[in-house]
Image 1: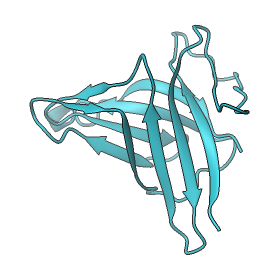
Image 2: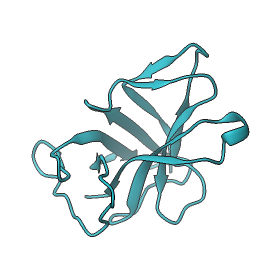
Image 3: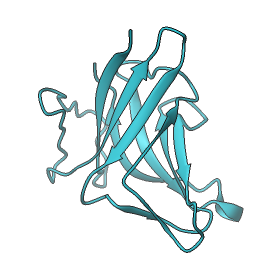
Image 4: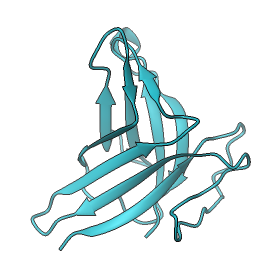
Length: 138
């Protein structure tokens, strides 16, 4: 039987405070100091071991424009690889409203910090730009 968890990512303001806990109740929303919820992700774990994720972007972040070799990825704290990512499918530009797929690391444990990260790809593929961050909730 699938188990769904809804999680909220909040647009950071510099300096970023990591001690905020955003409640995920009812409408599954969290707010930062400006009140902007920019993404929500849903995790579904199946009995056969697969964990599927869907990341839905919200205004003001959506639609997120990716060009050329750029990518957008969800990272979990203390994990070197992206949990889930999406790349531009058209070099001229791709608008991203949501992306989904199988989690590269399985379920993300409760309380884990997560970040939505943009990379320019190509020669600068190791450059990671934090777009939003949050904490996994039940």
